[in-house]
Image (cartoon, rainbow, N blue to C red):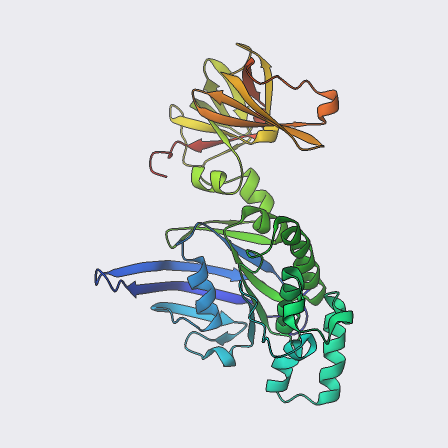
Length: 369
């Protein structure tokens, strides 16, 4: 739930153009993007390197100025406002802790700059260190903390000033896999308990899917899709989004009909109806059935829509990931409850099928992707 201090963030037709120092040409890093983050919401900017997501974060923080457009925090136009006047706080990829200060002093730094009374500082520091599970480490120097603990200190230092907007710039990229998983849970818990409006930047789809209320998927300086993690995963607008947020297989098809029940397609002579489909499709179009690993199944060769050979089985405990080499490429099939399901041996000839109710029919734009 949003706090009284939480504010919305609005980007209105924001463009950022840089001058390439080598070529002398103008380069559009962000091209006319518009979106709104509601008070207390955590929205993630997701996309490949160079898509403009970090530039958007820096423009919101005030470290970059847009070429055109307006940025609002609540009802205040902050487009040309200096960073220290915006009431934002940032958690960086590099923790940025002061080595000559202990944990408590690092966390208190922002409050001291605001000339808060020492008694209040001490109380708040104790509260926020307990909140991030570091109450017993207040006097330790940063050099004696693990990477995960240092990131918790950086998070507490940003949260303690109670900003209107919290900015997180790939804060977990320096941590190992287990710590990243733990810190994702921690960030989500703290952000929701405090109700701080937050913008998170990452190229890691797992972080985006697990942390966000909504995701903004970007490519080449433009917003491709905005939606909840479920929307983005189950109902992507195109092949770029579908492939960027998860494993996927594409089966060429022909659109046979579109009505209230969905999009009827033919895949190698077999007919299916998918409930989700691109609104750009029309009858007679060549298209693609998008199938996620959990929507696929494996059967005897010749029984499905695409034959192939099992190349690898990866056991994950509660599931097995089976890779099948086909003429369409290597396809991943997720087999849940492997103790009660058949696992096809590596080298076996098999055939792939899909549950049409879990698929979406997309425009075939792979050549343009």
